[in-house]
Amino acid sequence: LIYGDNTNPGNLKHRVLSYPGTFVAEVATVVGAASIFRFVVQKDIPTRDEKAAVLLKADGSMNVLLYNATSSSAWTLQFTVAAVGPAAAPHTRAVDMFVERLSGNLVVVYGKTGTNGSFFYRIWDGNTWTTETSQAVTGMAGPASWIGANGLPKTNNAGIAIIDETND
Image (cartoon, rainbow, N blue to C red):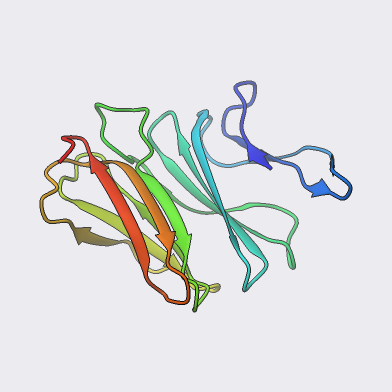
């Protein structure tokens, strides 16, 4: 279980559920600027016993973190994007991530403030992150305000749904 709270903005808190249904003590990790979390998206990467989290914060920034259950007991900050989603709609979730089913690569997909008609992504292969890549979307006039992504079974493909600020 991962979450944030208003008493310690900027701290990622997590607990592990152990059998038979009890949570171990809360652990807090400081992850950048003190800003409360609007959305937290978490995915398991089963091929490497890793977990990934995206924190979309009230200041419009996004933090991406990794947790490796084999080699570490802490979440580590991987990268930050300063302005995610449309500036005029601060309560949107212009970020998601998915795991490619065959390769086990993690793909983080997001929109950026002031960038119309495209989304951005970065890929984690277990060792390194790719550089940020943009992808134009035909017929999308505004910045992405909501993104949903899901890896398709038995492939490295995904379905990505995007709603932009102008709803086209």
